[in-house]
Length: 322
Ligand SMILES: NC(=O)c1ccc[n+]([C@@H]2O[C@H](COP(=O)([O-])OP(=O)(O)OC[C@H]3O[C@@H](n4cnc5c(N)ncnc54)[C@H](OP(=O)(O)O)[C@@H]3O)[C@@H](O)[C@H]2O)c1
Image (cartoon, rainbow, N blue to C red):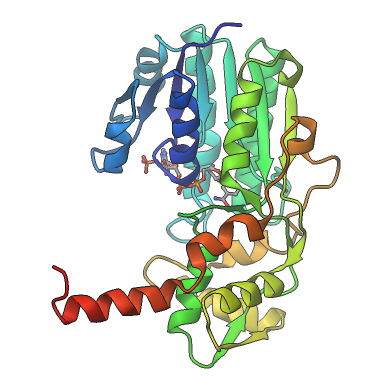
């Protein structure tokens, strides 16, 4: 299968940025479809890349936009919705995926790569996991109907612009001396964004990956409290991390849902009730990719982060630089 041009949904985010770099490094032509013109500026600097704003995600429009592509990658996803009805998750995960798949058939696209998540399951404990599971099953059903599909199910993903290690670093910074932590003993297997991108690139033209689902996890399994203690150490935070029981965790989720940016929600709490770790063989190993350890990457973007920031702020206040 020869692939020269790829359409990407959800290509403007954290994973999309890394993957777009990997793909253009290989000379592949990309068509990235953001919802607005307000996409990150660096995307416009990528070679062989067209940014095509899509305002309506109807099937006809998507079919037209992907018609010139040899493959489609769907990374679109959200971690939180407005309210707690599941409607927002269903729109982005289930409905958008179904529309993209139908458009793939109409445009005679033969290859489809789909981003899901560990524990995605139509009967899972949260709206996030249920809708991810519905989307994943729609993708696999499309494979049975002739669209060569591969599904990726990562644990939490880390890398310089992640929303996990960086978020805890920010929260620790503004927290009182005691840092209350919900789901402290939930287990994660953080996987490096570069390895996730490498998995997509490896799979793109590899026939053995067609019709497969790959769980993606890093080399270490850790509880959330171990991860947050590690972040505290790297950022020189002296906060004492206090694990909360189920009732207090629920209370915290209820409160933080109303904080701008929704740092934590009831749905996140439900998702964390299932450990986010690979159950069978890890997909990276199956794809011949050596998983990168947290310690190889995270210190490079968190180490002394806030001390450095304080230093730059002081210098700029003292007008040592503009
Ligand atoms: N990061 C993780 O730890 C992690 C772990 C497991 C699975 N995943 C999955 O990996 C994928 C990428 O995650 P990420 O961390 O890169 O997320 P991200 O930085 O938040 O990017 C999400 C992307 O989804 C698109 N999107 C959001 N809402 C949309 C909507 N209503 N309609 C269409 N597109 C929409 C955004 O496109 P716009 O430019 O249009 O806003 C953005 O490009 C998601 O499917 C996520 O569920 C991520």
